[in-house]
Length: 305
Length: 288
Image 1: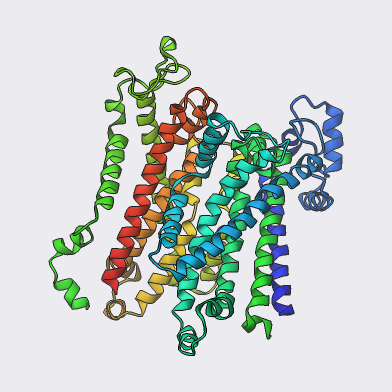
Image 2: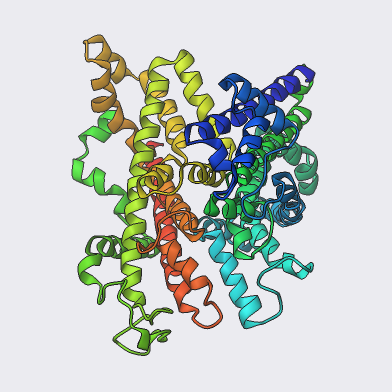
């Protein structure tokens, strides 16, 4: 198992190096970095200082090493928008995004997994049809549109929740609900189909023939076997939450990473953009690595090696 | 099995999925047909030029006057005309994007299956990497680094989920290679290209068509999402996502500005998804 995890760790590092290199190459290809990275009214001494700091007067290889060293220290330069360190600008948005995505992830699991189990155990029941209908709607309604519907209903019409901002906990309710509703439907659908697959296996029929009560079959025999594919799916859901933050956070003016990335893209704030790309890659790599490790822990075939 | 299928008249085989179709699927087809007709005829069927402003008729409510059936926006522009033009743009981009995506993914999958070895590893490794990162993040990065232009946008949208076509085609081609007809064609000296295009493609087209119906609504959602964020279609051009973004600022006083384009997006993606699900069930049943 250690070898498996080490191999995955190596791959994670390789992906990060690849991303940082790609960002470096693209930034160098698309123009003079000093002019891109400093605002238009930067004076000649600012340009010279920038060139010295990033080693722009040296060879391309040395420039690359400088770039990597600065990225490793978390130094991405100065944001165009407000002249602050990119590191500060980006890192103060991290907890905001984590509050919403992690809560939404927990809520989706708490709703989705029981709903999926019920749907798989009682095929064609009201729960089953509800889960399938919700999943179809979840695929067809854009998440930003659902966010707007929520704003219209709860903020404009009923006036019970704020529509935008992040000053109190009540501001987080609508973004979390928008995220969670989508993902709960997806989790429930995958839980349902995975469990239906497992319940069709011969060892379940054998357990039934032995007279083991249905809830014990589900808890002791079916769920541990369904857990392995579910971990992969939950990894996708977690990644989807992170990607979805780019669409849902702007709807609620929630000052997280997603809306930060969109703002930086819209204003051409390249120092922030490159930091966001690296940060999102770090998050995705961390999620995929967690999935791999859980996979190794859950799957006896890998665990035994 | 093969003999039975080929001896059936072609017409009844082609129409088989449409026999005994449930009413809900007919409704989906009807909506798709309306959207397609709108997509083709928007220039001629729109009552006004969608950019035409009428400051005296701002925020006209929908279903009140026949002059502006779905109301007007904050500049007095007709919502019906805007909706028709926006549907056309969104549909065009989704269609171009889907075709690019299908061609790219299918060709790469074919290359991977044909050459195997390191080509296979490279294509599939790239596909895995693409699938591991939410596409919206990749799209934002590309738009931030290269700027927004219509051409780049269409290609970008076309890059979304090509890896699913690649994986599907690769699997289908590898299993089709094992079948008698491909082997027979190869033995009598038919060139590989001809085997793939003339003999294999018709046999593996079913799952690829189903993939197209899954992909198309996703591309509509991606296009409207990026346009909603202000990163896709730029004014004065219009698209459904852009209309929703415009209407968003007036939710409290003019709900119809966001509601109608939103409804068109949802109805269109829902119709195509349901039709795709239905086709998949029918095509799978025939394969069994």
